[in-house]
Length: 227
Image (cartoon, rainbow, N blue to C red; front, side):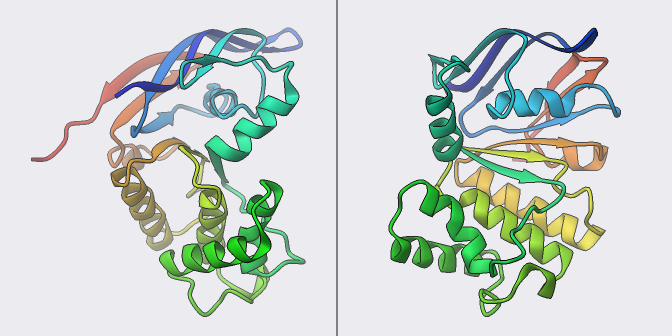
């Protein structure tokens, strides 16, 4: 498998505070990677750089072997919209839109025709167990269902990489298991999934675990697979 994302010599500072120190990391196409570490370890800062949501202070980033310049804002926006799907701890669903419209938004922004976007949104919501609830507003469904809508939205433009920042942080154990099952299915379909979590048990469900502390990578291990 070739690397879909690679970072070399990444540093990130805010004022006098160093957030990331000399990070070197390569993520291959189709990997399911978890990034774990204590609060303040830099794991979310690294995730945001991997997903082109933030620029490093120093270092190089490659997407599918192509060097990335953050000065090219239009190129960065295009890559984020077409190559990445983002899922956060908080769902950030648009309360004035129904579930179907929430999933349609990134497709409309990407230039897809409204009818095509509508049809795909219906399919995604059905796939994630939300058939029949498409016209409800976010406040009319549970927190676990809201996170599934957020996952559907992240998948809208058929991204190569799913970027997930504490996606189960606000969920109970039942909905956490549902979300992790979805991620596992996406991984088996060939999607690359990079997930930040503070729950050690969840890392056991991923293919690879990157451990961080004080802005540095202290461990990078591959979980054993069952035959």
